[in-house]
Length: 77
Image (tube, rainbow, N blue to C red; front, side):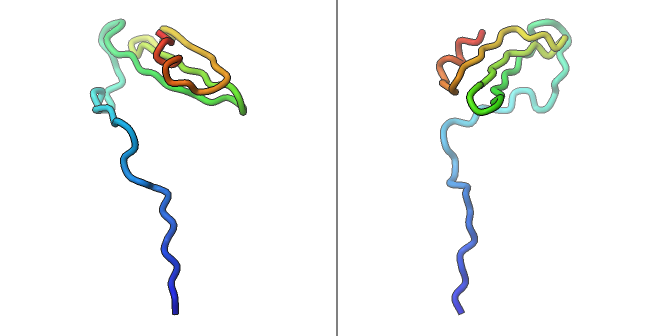
């Protein structure tokens, strides 16, 4: 009897992992104290990159691109 190996898609660490500075504390005591960023894919061809202030939920900056290019996301702010 031959058993198939279980499929595992995880290949190990890829790239650089950022430190967890917020430690799930998403409340800010003052404006511009904590900013977060996110990249969202909309449909097939749009990527929305936002920078959000956690104090009042205000969007500080955003960028919409047709493809995810990392240096362009750095320029959202």
